[in-house]
Length: 205
Length: 335
Image (cartoon, rainbow over all chains, first blue to last red; front, side, top):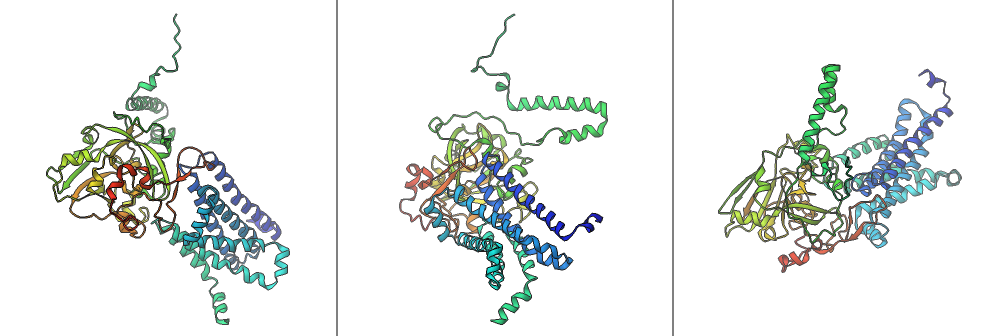
């Protein structure tokens, strides 16, 4: 604790970011090394799809938890990690999509597009990914500055993304809905903190 | 002195030692080791050692070798490695993740076992554990197994035709369908004890076939795979294998077979009638509502880069043998 008190905000953010980098990258490297060497169970394709999908969802929930936690404990510096966390959400979602394209449908492009069009849960997943892509691109500082107020409006789509992802997960499972339901509870809990914000948006219109 | 170097084709001692005897010897050696250690270090350490201090896997289910007629016609098919066949299972009674059954089923008790054949028949039968492997001559059948989730394996099953068993039971003229039931034992099957672990499925798991489907020579009662008895995660001690239907029809760990006048309820059809039909014939033309069934990933060896997506064949490639069963049926409706 005494060490903690001596840290400047800049140092705290720096160390936190290093921890985030390590916790996000190392499991991903470990995953693909095991998968390429056929060390990931009988079906490495299913394993990498599930791992990156759940990973993206977990990271998205962590990102959404940052602002309530920083308010609750008055840790304002936490907000400075949100951009990095968000970019890792995108990274995991990107690998999730690449896994589907490269290893599940194995570049059968007609099957890929057929699945996107005909399977609502995949359609929704892709819409969520496109939104994440927009958020990732606009996280570049020069673009952010140019966008002015529009930036915040665009990044409020985060709340739509988490809903789409939670539906995507719920629809994708065969019968065991316990896990998706737990994710729904956490999602709604985190969105509850934004209740006032949502109320304002809808009452203005 | 004569020094003999064994030729490559000569069997080594461990090749001709029966697995049971081999394991027995290892147990003797282990016990001796513990007694030695126990004498020196006292009981605490020895009991710790017995609980798996040195062994990574102490409690694996014991399978044993079976005598059977090999399947000479299909030896050229590229088989799914045994390690994958026994570690990638949909058996929700032991958990919904593919790796759960292997983890959770090793303590499963298959002896004593009773399989009763009853219903509309003249000669009801009860088979106990030893009867399952000894009442019928066993043969190997190397079959493709197509899961409804669009992956597939090639598995060398050991078993006998269900038709042979049915003939013994002598179904009467009222018998039109055959119903199957898995063991219900929540003490042994955590998925039956908890809805969360069991994926919300209503247990016991039940399946069914039309009598003519059950009598088809391809329909197998399997008691083993890869030359040995079934491990529990694959449905020990006896399971059904219907190679032209999606895998969920091939019900595991069967305790009851019953001849009926009417179509029996089936587990996945009860759970999601729009997604899983009674017939569940492998059909590339009829998509699952949430994914295409036109192709599948064949699980063999190789990691992520294995190019294993192949076209799915009507009736999983067994059309010649079974298509005639469905001559006047609309298989889009009766999916």
